[in-house]
Length: 432
Image (cartoon, rainbow, N blue to C red):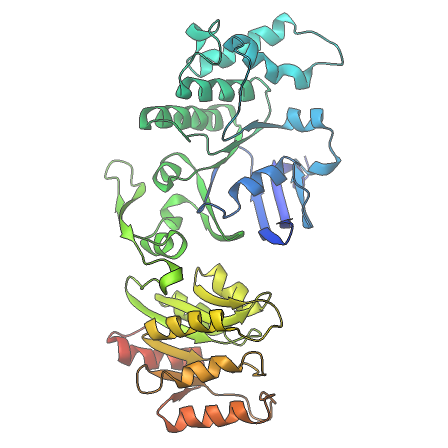
């Protein structure tokens, strides 16, 4: 077995687009054999897209998807079905076929052209029904059973494929809590007792922490957290990605973390969400000049906001990867009135403003103009620019504002460490 075959599923810098919208952006992922991995993230974060790319239903714009070392797009549908089983979020079943026959559909990947089911196939279907606790419903129609039983039947159909990789897209949707626990408990048994590799998109972080070995969090198409539940689940993550204030607790019997949500943070449309501990601090940058400050602030426990930035700007990518609220303009366009109003709201909500040493042209000059409006209201920190580096492409207007900020009380800092030290005086506590 080669190193690549050791990973039932591997994504290499996968980007998937729907028209002009990017659903996944440069996602790398390796899932080792026998692992139960939970995909988490808000609606629209890319969970279903990742699963569909893994199945070969969607072709990446960039990157590749491998099943056991082979590019999924090079495999026939029958070969894919022998390697990976699929449990969709919803399935519209029109014919009221008996559960036993319905589960048998999963054996088709193992049958040759025009070959009928054999006693071996029927025995496999019987075992699969027993594994999900539906042996007593084998002759009942799929439309006559409850939603929870139907979802278990779909799982049984996937099991009978005898595939070493199982993908599930929101398998607990529409199920009550009892059926959720039952279904995920059975999936975990598959992983631990049969060595099946499982990747499941789950909305409920507490369920993911209870049953999965690993949680990968997607946000706006990017992977923003990855690790065991004890390392991934945090109050900060829930606030940054979901916009929800919560308390983190641990089950005294198992040590598994769980979150108790309190309330929603204010939506981005009406201004930035406040930080649970420190902030928000607004970073004005562009062209990568603000990335180090965004990361340093986030790592120090600040909630950060950013902008205005243009789409495709590397500082925007950094800000989004940190879950920062941003003001975003289309590429190469001047900052328009709508984005400028959003920028003004972000600056107005900030407890401190950081101006990174970004190059200033006519299109992004409104950033400095709006920062100037905050003089006397909000502490402003100017990162010292390297001498001899040209940065003002506005005919001197940017330099004039920069000088006005300095004379108006903005403080010059030398770098991320100096900035954090200066902020400690504002927020009242030392910053590591």
